[in-house]
Length: 169
Image (cartoon, rainbow, N blue to C red; front, side, top):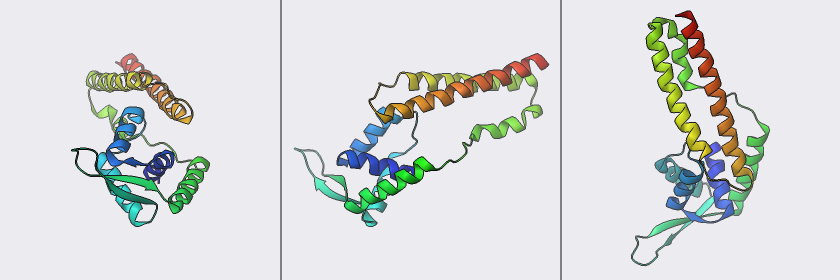
């Protein structure tokens, strides 16, 4: 649902070819959205079969032919429905890296601290990328700011865990 909403929403703003969609997502939402190029193309083809988007071949100069995707009236209706569902629902956040926390006591404390510090460095890198993202007008900026809040919260929690383990050592 999330990925379809994203693609339909971007196409609602303007028609685009697949590479344009991917480039926009990659350059503006890379810290907030995980959508592989192959998945985007698969979803575009699926939504074309469902009648939510149409595609037409376009060729510029000597470049290869590419498919340009446009939203259909049914696609606009689907976008509106998915948008309303998304904004009105809540799904708890799941943190895939937390499974290892359950078994922290199975490692020597110093090793566990070192591993968590490595994780912390990766989060700091991701936070720096999010904070360096260009400022956008409108609601896209809210998405980036939401990601920044979560990354800062993750850092605070990880600092707490590392300090807790350090004090126990």
